[in-house]
Image (tube, chains in turn brown, orange):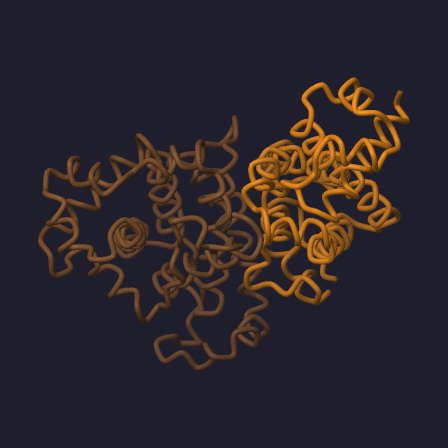
Length: 243
Length: 191
């Protein structure tokens, strides 16, 4: 899709540049975070089309000049920074949940709940889905959805590699991202993934047996991602523990 | 009347295939279908928007018709899912009109597809449910939950395959037996 028509774009982020994305929050200007949060408030009320630099300055409690000093590229640069920052915030929160989990099941449930709650409570995102659907929905369909899944799994897979080979961790991370997205886009009457008990049911019923089955096909899976073969931190002799 | 309805929907599809969504007018559709504007509005009082929605719904139905044909005679739940996933994946990739409109006018199509995807999900769940109950579910698994979950996942894979190569029967067989069915059915039959 033609991304230049929507002001928001999801930057394809490599694992290598992930720390840079996270540090976008504490960039040189002390006002950046404030302006980004002000912009989020504007987006939640008016969307991208009706949000001007003046609105952003007013909402953030800074002058127009300060906004342009922090973001010389103006509105488009701010909107880009908003997307990067929100992605960095989501992935750092996921990192904390996954990194502190004591077992695979806890990591999966924690990650799914964290992501689902953040998507549910993101009022700017909801306004855009409702009023400027092309901007957001484009990322959820076909090739762009593939990119989004790839980004999500590249960020979260390293945390799952504590319990499985890296190639398998990438598939499981992608799978979890699919589950979160599916229920976020089309909520279900019977399953609310923001609820740890219900997310736990999905993980126990569908994911853990599936991961066991993936694991028993481990050799072939590593073939699919040859660049990951011989990952130095993975001990091939270690059994998969799924609790 | 039923015939006119069908002819108008097919005419809309032909117009969209040639010119895209934005440039298709009720007049174009009437000319293409060989009926008057009034006939189009009698059949579709909502005008252009209703025509486009009806055309997407028609294309979905057409897809399901071909899908049923493709899975007919499959010997097992696994085979139903393998055939269905491979067929659906190819259908999306090879659907020239869908691909072109997604490229050039995503804003026009995406909101409709998002609504339509709920219907497609329910359709997939309805296809799978009888095979699931015949096969036998793992302890504690609810039929409706399992069918809904599988339909969500199938929809996700066919529209965005991610790390899976859905043209490779071996990979599809593995996908079906791991991320899709491993927790759902009684025991995983070895292929």
